Length: 227
Image (tube, rainbow, N blue to C red; front, side, top):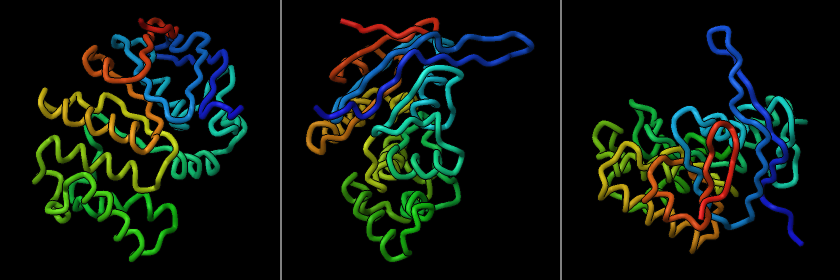
């Protein structure tokens, strides 16, 4: 039997805010299989961002284990975590996080620079991803020349250009209108269904979470399944 893409056991994480210790995660257990589309809901302060940072290898837990593609991330150093992020994980954020003075094409190329891909190769791969997103006519537009939906599609193209095994989407529809939100979710559903891309999505919107194959709720640092 194939091991889950990611596997978390009894995960704990705390941080100190104004001298007060906050227990952000309190014994999280989670498995996500290859090809799943999982939505995690929860109110502000529930631990969603903390969990996303750990899933994305941007932070490590205080206790418990997290295995991604069979590797225990708690045993990796900073350089190994950075390499794993670049190779295995794509990120999509609410605020797009595009480089403001850089064209759409150059934004999508950026992860390939860190991956050591040559200029011609990364330009070809970035162009292909943008064309796939329907942005072939926007290659050289700056982020401030794009609509919110176009900017998010550039961000998705950037997340996909390294061909990651896991896409982490943090409130990907939080900065767009309802019509564009539907377009983005349809795009993510297609990537999951047709490409078999594993997606973990954080959202506070029930109608967005409903588009995923499995829904979970995070509240007070604890995770539970939703019907």
